[in-house]
Image (tube, rainbow, N blue to C red; front, side, top):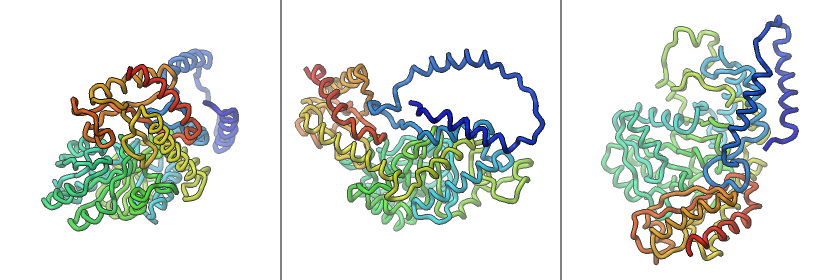
Length: 449
């Protein structure tokens, strides 16, 4: 888990950091190193009670280990503990955050977006929907029925009506019901999901933009999971067409703590039109007087925010610039290759039925069976047995009609089918597909017997 050089690099960086305030007079602290050693030993013991998120055999939830440079930079910043709300609390880290925002904007073709980092995709999406509701008061929010549940929840928090738009057989927003809903004239924003958390499905953004613009409606791209795949070179034609239009939406959310190699929590919201910053205007009796320069708290609903997230992201983007054709983009292509390889290998077993060709790096697959209920029971048994063999998966409930698209002989004796789901976020997993599928094959045979 720990590269041999990480602690040395952190020590060297801490020495360099200390030089900045070397002229200050010394002062005493009451740090008890012996007691701390006891506590930390217990912390380490307790933390062993986790899944091996860093290992290629962890193919369950969306958990990707931070890059070593992100870990080191994050830890380094904690000796300062900057707060990126106001420049008083985080001058250097605020500057780094602004540089990160500019670079992320360029990823989507925006030269000068308004934006900031956030605790995660939920808070970032909250701000995007809040802006939509402020510009279109009381109007409905639309998102696919496969979009993250946070959109319906946040719409409720904001007092905005919400309607889920039916998805198609690939788990993408169906534009026919979208067109009908837009025709009702009470919609303020459409959320296009650029990589659903269930299937990794990419909504048809070109069609969504055409329909929404014709109705005078904002388009928000929830690219929390999939945003970085704009850099990938091996997307299929539909996904490529969708990602190529991201620069035409009104706002984007992307989570660097997913594919951006960052520790939790590091989300980001970007607005194409910086003028929406006027919606944030507020006064503080003490916060914003140290500089006439922009304080990030002036364009954020959050107040205190960890500057450490900006420091870690800045360091990572220096190490791996987010540009097409670079080392960072190559990692995304490796994850796509892993998903497609697993899809083909599962088909080859004759024991599993992948529900669709993966658009990103998520594979969802059902255990082949003649009934929804028995397929579900078998999937749950595989989930348990695979974990005993150190292969960690996820379960997802899928409407039976979607499974019947690929397994038409399955009887619908239940409304949903429990399917297995593998998130192949780690590029190293491309070398482990044979091992993963071998474990799946051995785990399923007793389950279907």
